[in-house]
Length: 359
Image 1: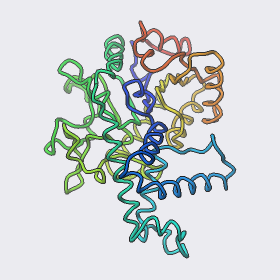
Image 2 (image 1 turned 135 degrees about the vertical axis):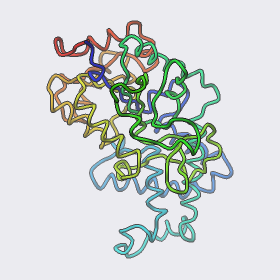
Image 3 (image 1 turned 180 degrees about the horizontal axis):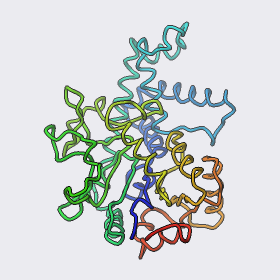
Image 4 (image 1 turned 30 degrees about the vertical axis):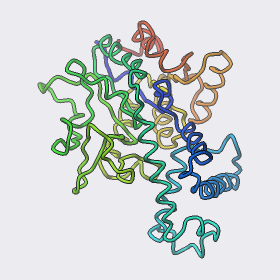
C-alpha cells in the first residue's frame, strides 16, 4: 500500500518565475530600475546605495565578496526593518552613534527608511499578482500527480504568491488552515491534522512558511485570509523576512517550521522546486533529514538543462547542506517542464532507493 509521506515538496521563488512572478534577485533589478527611472523612487536612490554598500561591506568583513554575497529582496527589506526600529532595537544602547551620512539620508526618526520599505512592499504585492494568472497553469501538474498517487500531497512553500491556491475548487481542495474567506474564518492548526473517521482529507496540505500576500490579522492578532489584497496596507502584510522572524511564536510560522521538520524526517524523497538554498534555517532542516537516513534523497528541480550544470548543481547543494552528494539528484529542466512531465508519479517513484518505498 502506498505511503504518501514518502514524498514531500518544497517550493521556492524559482518555481513561479515561469508564471511571470519575479524571483528575489530579479526584484532587486526591478527596484534598481525604478530608482533610476521613476521620479518618486529617485528620491530614495542615495539611501538605497548607502544601505546596499553597507550590506556588501559587512559581508566583505567576513571574507565574502560577489557573487558569494547573499543579497536579494529579503536581505534588503529585513535590513530596512532593523534600521527602522531605531531606538527600539535592543542594540541601540550599545551604539555610540549612527553613521552620520546615513542619519542625514534617513531623516528624522528614520522616516525615510520606513517610507522606502513601504514602497518596496507595495511593489512586491503587485509583482505577486500578475495580470495573466493563466501563466501559472503549469501548476496543474500537481492535480494530475495527486490523482495518480491518490494521496494528499504535503507541499511546503517559501513563496508569497497564490499559484497553488488558485488550483482550489470543489473537486480539488487545498488545505491552507482556513475554513473560508474573511475574518470569521481564522487560521486553525487542527485543520492540518489527520482524523480517523473524519471528513475526507484534502488533496493538498499547503504550508506557507513565509506568509502570503492575502493574509491579514484582526485587532486580536488572529490570522485570516481575504479575496482581494488591495485593502492590505504594505506595513501590515503578513510576510516573513529574515531568519529571526521565521521561528516567531505567532501562528502559523512556528507550526509550519515544525511540520517541515516532521515530514522531512519521514520522507524518502524531498522534491525541491525553484529553491536556491539561500535560507539557512530551511537548509538545516533539509540537512538533518538527509543525514538521519542515508537512503533519503533530495530531488532538485532548478534551472539546469546541460550535464555540466546538473553536476555543478549537485556539488553546490551537497556543499551547501554538507551532505553526501550521492543523496542529491538534479532534474534536467525547469519547474514548468517538470510539472508537465508525462507519468510524473513514475518519475518520482523511480528516484526513491529501490525497495525503500511502498508505492
